[in-house]
Image (cartoon, rainbow, N blue to C red; front, side, top):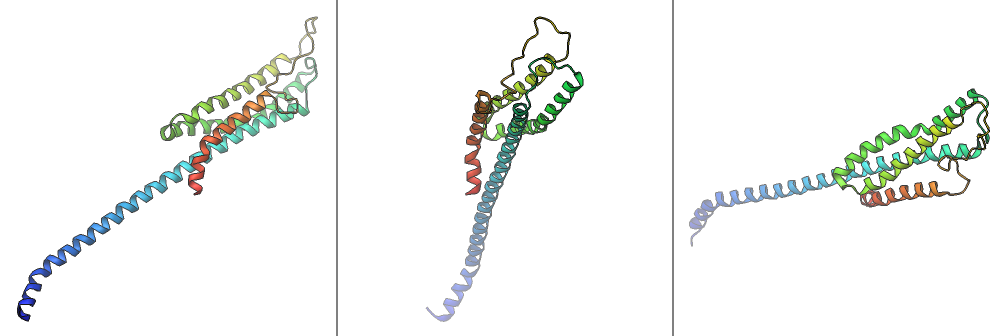
Length: 202
């Protein structure tokens, strides 16, 4: 084969080779692009789930801390064994107790909203534990109301006697049943969220 023939063959194949190279480069670029998009979506999903998990935990801790602040106050400041003689003192005490408890309200609102979002991502695993937390919150609300109503000053009567302290509001200074149940609820939610936080950390 002469040199001229080789040159002719190369000229004939040059467009084909060029097109093949361009096609291969485009294919490789597309593969890299798809891989990058998948990586970005995976990172975005991980970041979103991590943020949601942290928000849920933060609100759970805020509710728990409000409960503990209220119960610590009642432990250090028990009421008199009978009805209050002064409605003003009763009102002042009730307002103070409500102020210790009030931070739970906004935390529970955020928690319930995040709970709805979590169900679309993780299912109802956390919702079961959330019901126990919501139950504890309702117990505190009810106990606060009854504490106030039953101690409103009224004419003394033979039936009046020492009032029993509500164990929901009043701790004996050691982990009681209410505190143990609360600690379990918090731990259960932590255990549900720990793998998500661990994946983000890794």
